[in-house]
Length: 231
Picture 1 (cartoon, rainbow, N blue to C red):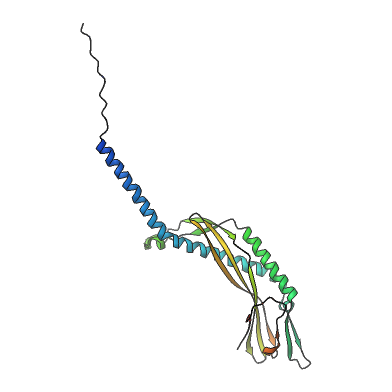
Picture 2 (cartoon, one colour; picture 1 turned 60 degrees about the vertical axis):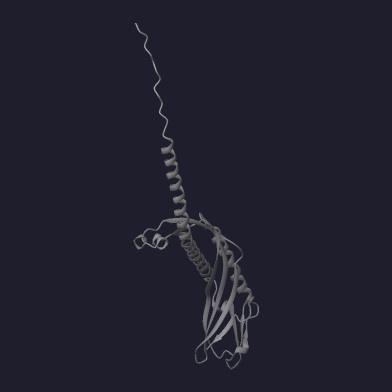
């Protein structure tokens, strides 16, 4: 009986040329994706940043207006302003009640700060049509969550305005200008947004002549030219 000869099955090594070709293709695809991502982010980021700032400003303005309305429910024009007249009914003094005004501003600032502390995040939508320039993608709006946080103290300024509305009638308005800086934390970076809000605190029609020289608004922390008489 002849002995059988056994031989191992030959293992064929992969073609090195094919491996190199696959590697080259993968590398090209990888860098192509990086380039596409880079171009997309450069195009999308300004739109994303603007959308975040718009959403933050909208939310901030709503908070300011809501808190001002809540506080001002407990006050009237006569609480903030005292008007003195002589025996002939002529106005001799228009004086601000600094105690009430400072109290109002303090409450509003405290309430606004508390509300900002309660906002963990807001939703921002990105219009892909604006990002890509392709009009049929306008309805495609992926959403992102971003966080808001106070980035400093609120700067509040009382501003008052007098406007003639008839014979011996003056429309008096008292505004609160609030400047706040809000930090915006996003998946693509962190930046800040200045939010400036003008809110009407109270107003009234003053009957009687209001001479410029009798404006007396002492007691309120006001920069120069914060009260104006508009003809």
